[in-house]
Amino acid sequence: MSNLLRIGVLGAARISKNALLAPASTNRDIAVTTIAARDPQRAKEYAAKHGIPRVAGSYEELVADPEIDAVYNPLPNGLHGRWTLAALAAGKHVLCEKPFAANADEARTVADAAAKSGLVVMEAFHNRYHPLAQRMQAIVESGELGKLRLVEASFCFPLPRFSDIRYNFDLAGGALMDAGCYAVHIVRRLGGGEPQVVSAEAKVRGANIDRAMSAELRFPAGHTGRVQCSMWSSAVFKIKARAVGEHGELSVFNPLTGHRLSVTTKEGKRVEHLSKRPTYAYQLDAFAAAVLRGEPVLTPPADSVANMTVIDSIYTAAGLPIREPSVS
Image 1 (cartoon, rainbow, N blue to C red):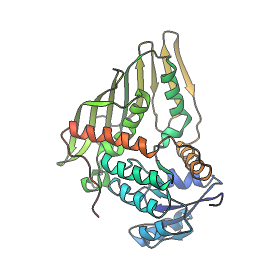
Image 2 (image 1 turned 45 degrees about the vertical axis):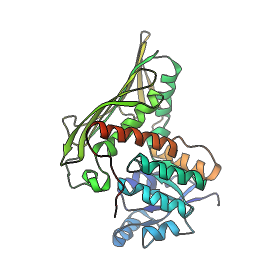
Image 3 (image 1 turned 90 degrees about the horizontal axis):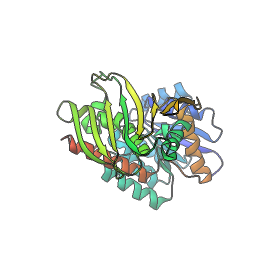
């Protein structure tokens, strides 16, 4: 491989602009060269709009292209596993949007394939690569807050367009899959160790789609965790994280794209400001560094399996079925 990482994009998803195309435009290690979509005309229009040089005739053609080194996979949740596996079989590195797979079993299948391939597979929890996330974890692990009592995260936003694929059970949709996977990931990182699900409650749209979900967790060390997420609920917009210990509290208003945190202890309150550089830019830097220079990633497949295991357990506790890979 040369010192330039050539990436192909599966699908014409809206998220690709912020997650890949914008940061790639200023990253000298990256070239986004090709796109494929289920609708070839849409792929051509997307390529023309965003300056992508080539359009592949199908997903299969794109992953088989010898002029591509890596694949960015922002397809619907239920297709993540299938096309990550296809890319690995074709010898391509993968940056896969969250959630990593439809469920933990599929995530394990992908993780096993990734391990055998020796290729880089990274789940796109972009916030994890920002200095804010690293500072949050460092403060908790430093002991400044004392012994942990509670870690919680919320990701609630309004999505009243019920025809959106995120409300489609056949595509592994649901609030927990789309928004809650972030909250679960943040709580796991700050809580340390893997939590058990104590209880969960869903508000549903139709038979099996959670438009909102809340869950209570417990960590091996004894402290508790709490996850809240929604695409349509009375909690219209709520994105925050908090860690409470015996001696103080860490609070972050927006742990996904923010750059500020506050710590309150008996010594008083302080506010720390971190980099305003986009989280997606840090994520793409990390992906390129892993592929081109062998540097480790913070969201490897093993972490994805652990995150999906908690998500599956929350669905089970809430009385809803675990999501399944899409059949078409």
